Image (cartoon, rainbow, N blue to C red; front, side, top):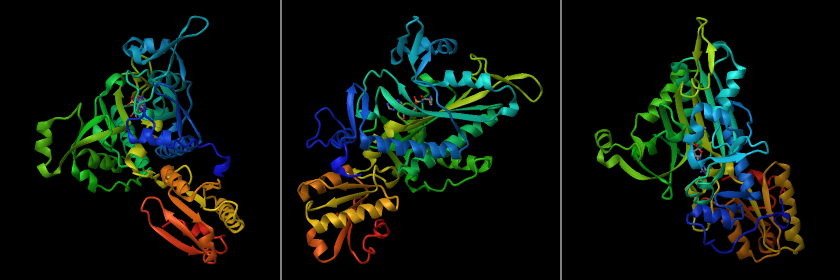
Length: 447
Ligand code: P5A
């Protein structure tokens, strides 16, 4: 993509309305625009990151055996009356009437609808277990939408729903999602610590939140510093291997970690030695719930069991804040100059900086590099605008692409181009010959 053709409305100064760094940076980089309190348009840079995150979430859900569907954003109220949540949800639910005066609502979550879909589609225990998920916009009329996409009113969520014939089978479905969440967040460069949590309006018997640590997080957290020494990448397990899945869950739940709602100071002191006790703040990027039969009983979701008798299914639901993650990743990965995107979610991998647009040699070299990178499938944003080098460097650092390729007439005279790693700041110089007349430039990018 050529920057001269792109839409990336950069703000020079910090926007006054933003209180936290991720919100400031998202506005400054032209990733989002506020349309109403807690409601945002996703501009091209923001949209690319959102899609990358969504895709990682999708791949890991699929890997764990969940099946993707898509339910509407606007739901009829009837199902919610049956579950008893229509009144219980209170003012957070956006209620709408259609032209026939029927009560509708903009879904804050989908337990009722998916349970009804499932009820109609499945009769026998032989059809279980199943886990259905979708990635869909939600609306919650939050009292205090704030921090940009972190606490929005309209936000993108991945929500999965598992259905099992017994409590034991349901526990395995829960555990699979637990492990898949560790994997999902790890792929985005995040350590999301699972913590026992309150279930709130979603309800249920058991629940864990996944929190990334950040000073600006909305939840107080208390945890064992041993979490920092855990292996956050070794979850390459067979999801059908019940014992292996249990082992990962046990490892991660054996250490103390709780949000302030569930924190028990006496237990914390008993279980964690003083030097290992940490308190801080966290951003909730995922939340999983085990319901037992809370939703299946009132909604009549039963299957024929092995003995021919009808049994209510055991269900769970599993949420990831896809749009919140965009802000969360920035909170976890930035410096004074701007964002530092972890490669898997970066909007582009490389920023190509032309230091002297209009200089024939520099333009030709940049074009060669641009084509060579695109030809190898490397996503590149080419700054081909006529601007000062200083301003170009600042913008590239601000938008945080993992690598910068810097090309100017002075370097080219010596046959050299420069590559900078945004995260480490390390620079290396390569010659045009080394890069095979630019054809192999992509081989030199990662370091
Ligand atoms: C689980 C899936 C649920 O809604 N029902 C379906 C369950 N859980 S939850 O904890 O309420 O939300 C899941 C995740 O969504 C994100 N989230 C938000 N993101 C941005 N703005 C909001 N206002 C907001 N509310 C929830 C969080 O990441 C949460 O973990």
